[in-house]
Amino acid sequence: MQRVGFTVEKQPGFAGKREMLKGTLLTAKEKIREGTLQVEPWLITPHRAPAEQRAVIIGGGLAGTAAAYSLARRGWQVTLIERHDTLAQEASGNPSGILMPLIAAPDDVVGQFFLEAYRYAVQHMNQLPDFTWQQCGTLQLMTKDANRVRYKNAPDHPALSAGVMQPVSASDASALAGIKLSQGGWFFPQGGYVSPPALCKAQIAAFPDCIKVLYHAEAISLTYINEWNVLDKKGEKLAEAPVVIIANALDATHFQQCSELPLRRVRGQVSYLPATKASQKLQTVLCYEGYMTPAVGGVHSVGATFHPDETHEELRASDHEENIAMLKPYISEGLLNHSDVEGRVAFRAASPDRRPLVGEVPDIIQFQKDYADLVHGKQYKTYPAGNYFPGLYVSLGHGSRGITSTPIAAELLACKITGEALPLEQSLADALNPARFVIRSLKSGQA
Ligand SMILES: Cc1cc2nc3c(=O)[nH]c(=O)nc-3n(C[C@H](O)[C@H](O)[C@H](O)COP(=O)(O)OP(=O)(O)OC[C@H]3O[C@@H](n4cnc5c(N)ncnc54)[C@H](O)[C@@H]3O)c2cc1C
Image 1 (spheres, rainbow, N blue to C red):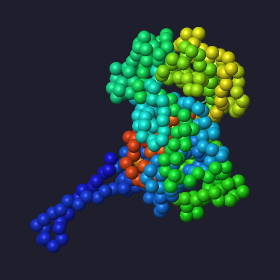
Image 2 (cartoon, protein in one colour; image 1 turned 45 degrees about the horizontal axis):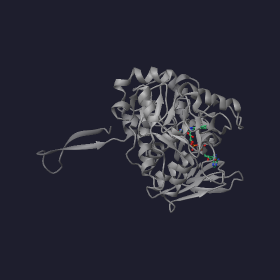
Image 3 (tube, rainbow, N blue to C red; image 1 turned 180 degrees about the horizontal axis):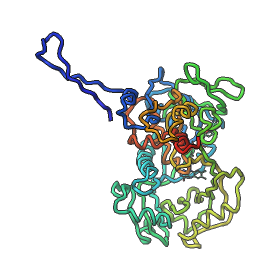
Image 4 (cartoon, rainbow, N blue to C red; image 1 turned 180 degrees about the vertical axis):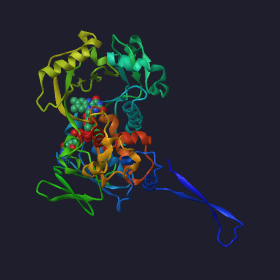
């Protein structure tokens, strides 16, 4: 909330006959100096209007292409740097992925963010030019965890009152899915599945005059001299701009400015199961501990394993078995064809608290100096505002739900960069601030 200070002053030249009210809009820094600001100072990220509407984005997956789209639709000139010779070759390269919110207890900030992100993503997919996706609905079948969290809070859950999800019995679920299911659960009528590579391409193709992609270019370091210079491994300049968005997933930590961001590699394998006559009737996405899509080109995508810190890039038979084992309790055995299973391996970039990292990049060394006394539990109002690199932003840590989270992350960044009103409540935007980890470490004395 903006605070306005009022004083009553005598009007000069009116011999004390009249008085006027004079208001002063205090800046965040002035409020901190006064000690009246209720916001944690490290969350204050003053808007610095860039001299020109030019940005470089590093990474041609869902996070980078969504960011390019959001800036280009505001008329910005964007250079996107991608090390492969096409878009979406890494985590965003699976042929199908699920659009689905992460439902958690109503007061859980992760669930609150993903609910907003989901509603935004649905609109984004439906408005994106020359893009089709399968809005067939998503059925979340009852699992132990889902049962515990969702049903416990069912009557009050904001996703229910917003019409985002509705409870379904096993017979309702079977009718929706087109196959017999042993469990009911929750139906998300606006959900479905998406081809992430097609989404990346459509986001870039929407503004051919504004977005230029440099393929086969690998960004290795960033230096700031009046604006950001993005350099390759020979130290040669790939591009420059007043604004840079780092959206290259796990590799972001190779940049010195992001080296302390806590991203974790999580190996995932998706299995492609040949459809049978019976399984071809599946009409909605099934979610449980994993997921199964309706058949596309005679194949179901069944996913996905979740193995933190593994680096093995080859397909593993044991992971196919794991994917099939997750699915088996929910459908009849005769429905599946386990022969000739193929698949794909990729690596998620996950954050420790399941929220993506979206926003300005904190200068960690300065944070460690400015907030060193947090460990002693000092009142936050005695601290200076956060020190962030000018014009440097990230969209990282989208974990297992980048289809849902990247469109709103891109909008949030575009609004922060241009100084527009944010598309998320301030508290949710703050919950994505990449500085949250260093602050936690400082408070606990681990930094
Ligand atoms: C098996 C599996 C299944 C999944 N299923 C789903 C699902 O059903 N629903 C869902 O919402 N999400 C799903 N996800 C998660 C989703 O795919 C990710 O959240 C999303 O793709 C992340 O996008 P990104 O742009 O951050 O990363 P990436 O797609 O990895 O993009 C990063 C890009 O940066 C490029 N790059 C890296 N370093 C550099 C550099 N130095 N210079 C230039 N370019 C560089 C890479 O080549 C890459 O193109 C799944 C992930 C996996 C692994």
